[in-house]
Length: 378
Image (cartoon, rainbow, N blue to C red; front, side):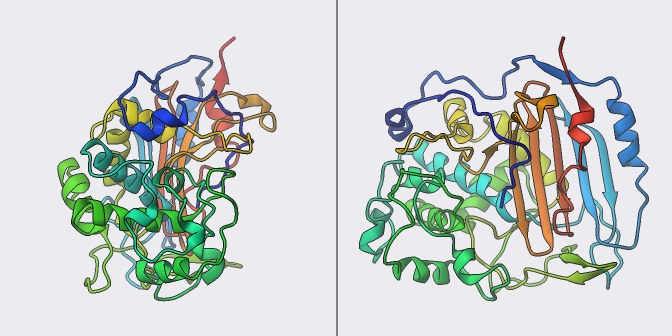
């Protein structure tokens, strides 16, 4: 689930909701085009050297890359895949990427939009049968932008719930008596909405979500080490085990029995996540206008501007971080049990932090790191 790394200061609206719902290709500004205000500091090399000097250990760890103009300027592997196996983390290591999967789900949805297989204004009930009356006005656009009012199934089941799959989440939705708010009125992060998107993708494509993602996203991009989980699948080679820290020791906190797709359910390697990031910012799978929609953040019916886009969030620092206020940033973050993952990029500087970890919160940048990396242009 994505943390806010700084107090938000949001840009102006990119497009009206009617344009969003039409799916038309319109001339929208690409959010990653440079608007110079900050630049990378002269001491970036020093900070990179600090990261590179972090010693290898026999503890759980992290796979990290810093990118400039899409090219790695630092790659670092630290720790082991499992305290039992002691295999060092490497480019082969597959981490559970948790909510980073939402960025794939959002793109897959817009791919089907461009193919004419669905519309963003479609009611979810058009695609999924037996939804309760309270959910009849929920649209696909609401699911994508976290404005559906659907309660998060994690709040109902708990983060440690076992044997959670899409059918169980669908059962939870079908028993709802009311939404948390009227669709579009407010925003609230909802894993439930992205599970429903996975179900819509499966029905609209005539295939399962896993098959569509594999054949239309992963294979064309060459993401050969990325795996969508299935209950019947065997052991995943080089699968990292998740851990949480209790005092001075690490305790296994794994996700082997969590099968829900759409909001999670994907293992990947650092190289494959880099490939995915590059495909997003280069609009490789969808038109640039729809890439802009992914990063756009809606204004709700109550008049508040959300920080949540489609699988991505606006992480632009605000007044609480005056040294970096207005430094444009977009992120996607995943955290579940003993896994964490982060894609954080700064479009004006073409700089990105991508990290995967088998330690809870281990993928986030160190405190004050970004404040040291950027400086304001005078």
